[in-house]
Length: 604
Image (cartoon, rainbow, N blue to C red; front, side, top):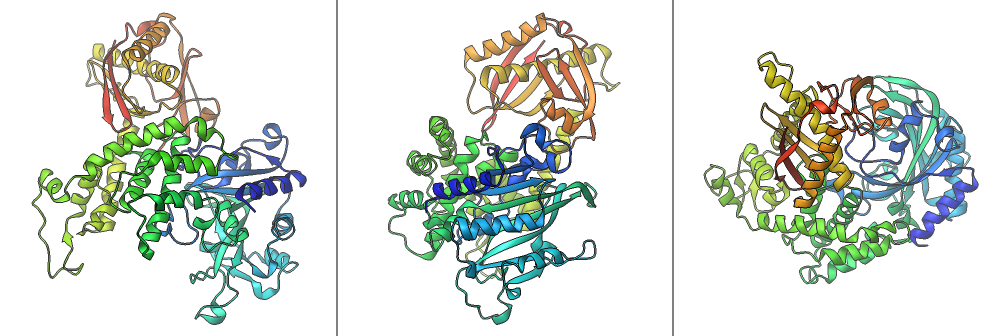
């Protein structure tokens, strides 16, 4: 059975059971600042689980299904084994205040056993055993006895059998996992070789989450207004089971891509197990890169763009050879997904253009000698150590040096380790977090209005800064109108002389594009549009279409500034009362700020 046939059977089965098919949402979550990427099928349904939206109004059904594109980095170090991925597709059925545990378990069993004919002898089930906060889910254990013998039903704690939330807060609940037994034979642990054993005998196949709680920002669980069902089953893992392969890379979701990688002259003669794992990492990461770009992520050093860059370079680093035949790889991915994602073909040119540009940038970095770069950042060339506990070939550098090599020159931690450089990885992660906090503080400062209201600034200058600040709203919307909705604010700064606006865009603006942007801003100024604001919750602001790109930390109540019907943004203010007060808008310069980020400076 092909992966396409599996998709079709899944959809047909649940449609027959009165579910409504909902299209996969983007890998960039809409209106959810708690996560960078979509990691689960339930994310687009969070407002319905918490009661903020009515599924009957939007879907005409309380029973939903989706095949959701997902991306997770939590298991990135496991990629290359038999069944872990960064990018994957999740088959899921959802009930919002409709059916609950009994029906969810029955539907899962009917689909696996009757619809796709999995041998029930290979299946085990788990349930939540309870803790000090929540009682044991004995109901689920009892329900499973209808389908499985007691010895194949086992309880586990919160780490294994309590799912969620997707982010720092949100819907969650105890879960029941269906595990697939590949061998039927215990490892050396004997009777203790059960689901969640790490010997490779068992694989989690389907997770049934009984979403009845909400975790708030203070870490407290509260009952949701309704009891809901959220299930997730990886298409890649299900294909592995049905196609009876040894690992997901042998299924039809990966095999054409793996074949293309092996054909490459750089890898053709490699057959060690380490090389096979590297081929798998490349295949997973290449697919992830394609779908991240497909969903609008651009290469950068921030947020989703940083994740995209990381997986791209991690793929490149597998054989220290960045000259991959990317167009051929993209062709194979399009071939694999031609039925389920036909729009990949339409975006092929954009995919290739974006990837080749990043590849060329990385080739320059790739040729750098690490020792020379260390000298370039003002450090002495590290000496080889013969008595270091890390081994005679290791060269010790500080975590700060490692961070500088990473942040300034793009040298990944994987490459540094591959070339024999050793550093404290925990301290390295702290340096990255420190950098994020500085960026976050800058974002909060900008959200608060650029310090415009400071009494240290002369009144005349404050007035000009207010005019410039309002002009940034018009500028952002004009850029989106002229260049496209991929434009996202990455930063801004205002002083008494000019505004500076950073935004996502892969290439330099043409003179014609700059002229159109400038003319559009001045047109809106000439129309003398009113500028007003409302206070509301962040969720309501997003629902009303307000732009919000400093996602790290918004207050519960936000101000939404509207410029007529033209622009709507979450912002701290202050602003002019109507656009005619801004004056003539003029772009001073437009240049690169960093890879994938452009910077405009303008005045009024």
